[in-house]
Image (cartoon, rainbow, N blue to C red; front, side, top):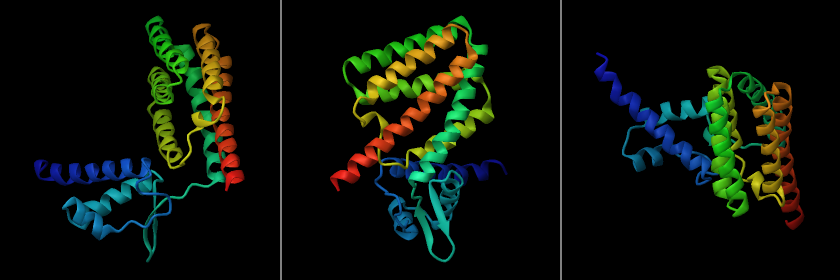
Length: 223
């Protein structure tokens, strides 16, 4: 009985992941209507697992199901970004505070090693490398905090942020600014200062939002 349910479950999850990556890469752009029949034909599946996959993505906020109109890739507004980053700053700040209290010496060594990767990527002006190390640093903090509900909320919000076509690190001077912010966060962590770590992390997240605003304004001027 259990074995008969494994294949369909794995199928719609695989479809959801494929669509998720196409959305993150902006191959399926914000506001795009999702042609269910064309996708089902493309993947060689029936529409049933495809619809289940779309329900998963809808629960993550990546697509929007509109009655009698179909399914669309979610459009994220500037107001959405303001609200999401505000919540993210609270959640990640709390995560930094908890991690400061819980971190072992081994955990701190691991964070120092990841930070060294940030320093190296910044020196080379390697934005992709910096982004990956930045993600690894935040993920490590979440693992140290060891609060699955906090992690779940952060992951879901980060998925929605990725709907934005802009990347904060492309703002002039943002890479250096982000690196300096990380230095402050690491110093608070290693100094066992939970309240300072929380404050520095909240400032770091909100600085990322401010960088996106600068990018949007610059693009509007060009347009």
